[in-house]
Image (cartoon, rainbow, N blue to C red; front, side, top):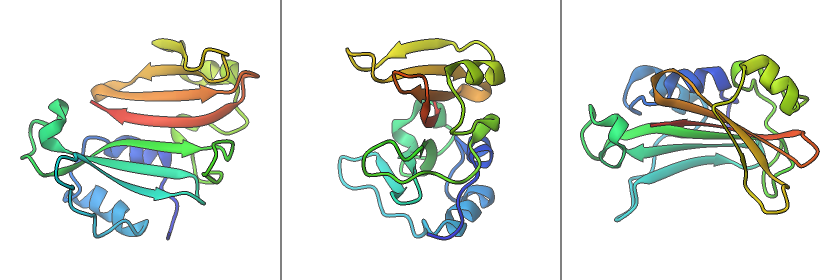
Length: 160
């Protein structure tokens, strides 16, 4: 691992090809290059820094309708996950979260920062994991996941 990626930088690069200079530079800076080839029958390659609390995923453009401008086989940045340290196996992401979020945020402060979410969901029957999703420009989605007590514990960005 080298430098931590910046959440707003990644937000701006979603949907970019790994060969485009801005994304290529980021991948180089964080030590993700060279990217592994897509495995047969697989359309995703990941770069995970478990201790640093983040996971960046690139998808084959041929399997991502929103990336139709790129030829099949082109790795396109399509998702990133940032972890608070409360997710088993991942350390706490200490870099800058997207859109001014911080690990001190709650469901209420997140809505105050981002406005009303487009979707609210519960991902476990016991209500342990709750999430709010914002649909941003360019087909990008930001999801903030919260504990039952309302503490932010994961932020994800997705394209397409």
